[in-house]
Image 1 (cartoon, rainbow, N blue to C red):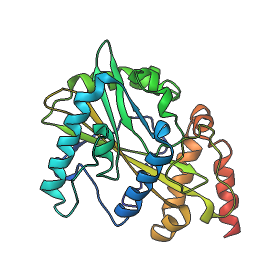
Image 2 (tube, rainbow, N blue to C red):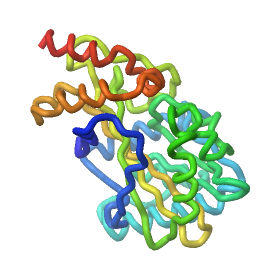
Image 3 (cartoon, rainbow, N blue to C red):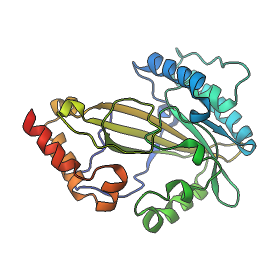
Length: 268
C-alpha cells in the first residue's frame, strides 16, 4: 500500500488534485502479472460488466492506447506492449496496465464515452456510460453543491501539457478487487477483516482528440497491516470516520463503522 490518504484534520470533501509527472502516470508493481490475469478472466467471463463503449469514444480510445503504449516504452521498458488482436482500443490498452481506464468527451457536457473498469468499488459501469460528470457523481453527498462547478471547470481547463492525480479511499469488508455490487456492506469483526481500499486516479487531456483520460489504480490491504506499519493509522482513521457527515457515512456504508472499529480494536 504506497498511499494512505487520511487527513489528520478529519473528513473533507475536496478534489485534492496534484500535478502529475507523466513519467509516473502508470504504476507497475509486484502484482502486475496477477492483476492482468484477473483482468483477462473478467474480460472473458463478464465483458458486459467491465466494458462499456460508445462510437463517440472510439477515436479517443485509440489515442489513449497509443499514449499508454508510448509511456510504457519510455518508462517501463520491460513491460510488453503488444496488443490482443481485434479488440476495442480501450480494452487492448487496459490489458497492458493495472489501471482501469475511462475516456470522457466534451459534447453538451463532459460525458463518459468509453471505459474498461475491471476493479470497480461498488458502482455499475453499464449505468454510467453516456452520462455526464454530474450524473455520474450525483449520488455523492455534497457533490452538487460543492464540487460540481469546480469539477466541470477543471475539465474545461485541462490541457495536454499538464496532468493531475488524486487519491480516494474507503473501508470495505473484502479485499476482492472486482466489486461491482452497489450494496455497501460495513466491515466487522477483527481488524484483519477490515480492508482499506485506495484509488489513485489520474486525469490528462489527450493531445489529438482533446478527450480526458481518467485512470484508476486500485490498492487494497488490511487495516491490521497498516496499523502494524504506522501506529497513528487507526487514530487518524477513527477521526476521519467520526467527522464524516451522516450523509457520507450512509453513502459509503460507514454508519456505525467507527463503533465497530473500536470493538475490533478491543478484540485484538
